[in-house]
Image (cartoon, rainbow, N blue to C red):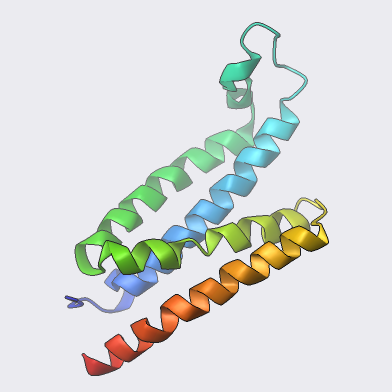
Length: 135
């Protein structure tokens, strides 16, 4: 694994940023969809275009772009077989964010799923830590 950058350009920091951007834009898109649900006309409701009437959606769009940019940086240095599983922590962060910020409820079964995602991340991360030590 080539890891020649550090600080802000560190691929691990960029991976964390990518995850943060994805989490933030998902929450913002939900806020925008909720805010504009009453606007949707029956004919074009399936497109979600009414969401463009929300400032939350417009705030999310640059985060989508930033997540793409950071993800492309990550892929230059971290193998996809490592970066992709680690990035899937968003599957825990988004529900947690929707619970904490949006006040959505999380069932016991979903809490179990979040725990499994985090357990899987821990299993994937352990060999990554060993690999990093050898570099």
